[in-house]
Amino acid sequence: PAREPGVPDSSEAIRLGGVAWKLEVWPGPAILAANSTRLPDLTFSAGLLISTLLSFIVLFAQASQRRARELASVNEQLQAHIQERIRSQEELEKARREADFANAAKTRFLATMSHEMRTPLSGILGMADLAMDTELSIEQRRYIALVRSSADALLTLINDILDFSKIEFGHLQLESSPFSVHEVIDQAMQTVAPQATLRKLSLQHTVLEDVPCIVSGDALRFRQILLNLLSNAVKFTEVGEVELTVSTAPPSDDNHIVLRCSVRDTGIGVSAEHMQLIFEPFSQADSSYARRYGGTGLGLAISAQLVRLMGGSLQVDSTPGRGSTFTFTASLARVFDSGTPGGGPDPERATFTKVYRILVAEDNAVNQELIRRILEAGGHQVTLAANGCEAVKRSEEAHFDVVLMDLQMPEMGGLEATAAIRARDRVRGEHTPVIAVTAHALVGERERCLAAGMDEYVSKPVRAGTLLHTIAQTLTAHGQ
Image (cartoon, rainbow, N blue to C red; front, side, top):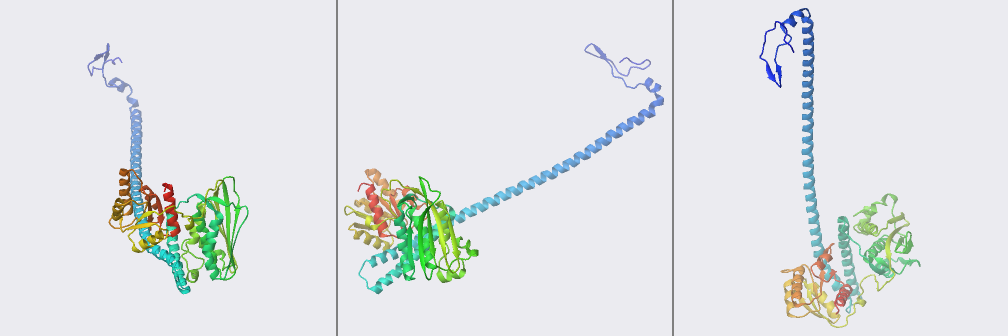
């Protein structure tokens, strides 16, 4: 702007871009002199403006400080929350490791107990069977029968504990193969018949016409459910009868059929408040029942889980003092080409076309004697080995048609011995059938044996029919 008249230059002009620029103080003296009467108003306005600006600055500073404190507090809370989450995750990870360790320890304990208890049981039951085939007096036969009955009860207890453990870990898997419904029912009825006869109970069963002769499923587990229910019915019935009725139920279709099995008794019955309790593990309707009737309280709990795995349900209708009716359903596959089904191995089906040379690797002297007697009764030639090293050595010195291999042996176990035999077979271009005969009965043991190169698996206690059937089946599969 043009300089006011009478105002001296206060700065030098600067030429930029063809324009002369000069910095001057404004308002100048002339303007101030001309507006001297308005200076108080200008001063007040300027002070008010400055005060307002300062107030806004102070308020903004206070708000900023307050916001900063709030953010700092939130940040502290977030840091505390993060630390708490980290601690929680560390505690969860620690708890998971401890649970995994406890589960692993439990599995090892069960495996060890299964082996250590099944091994002597195998000897007891096997020798009792052999003794029953000899000439005995009536009193001696009764003693042997009691020994066998007691051993069977102990074996049932061990199996129940192992089954419950498998179910608890979710490791129990059902097999599927054709079987005769009538044969499985007959086997279950024959098992409980001696106890029913001892109690003077009427034991009956009815299979309706719409039930197919052959179905596909897990015959062993189906029979186990029947046995649990029938055994309980006989055990808790003092006078009267026990009746099994088998029929079909909806929704059956072209590929599947639902079987309904009802076990009715005239026993002590169950009160309404105890209905659910009887399906709990290690529980009975009344604690006094355990003292009077015995039992662990696992049978119904296991049966309920097995029924669930078969796609069915287990129900009870009971009146105290008048009896109970336990009913379960199971979904099974229809079989259109039945082949040669069965409810389990039968000694009479184990037919051999010739005498075989069999190597038995077993460190327990009683089981050695038991297996040797069973095989020699069939006319076979038996060679014994006390451990895996001996088994490998003897199989190198002579040819054997089949090897029965225990798993847990001193010096060298069965899996290692099988690996050595398989390595030699590969060099010779041959295959020696190896069957695991072991007291290890936990889930996965059969698969572990097959993965190690074994051909079949038999769990102890050794039953003559099961062992001979497995040997015949294995030799037939290898063209012998």
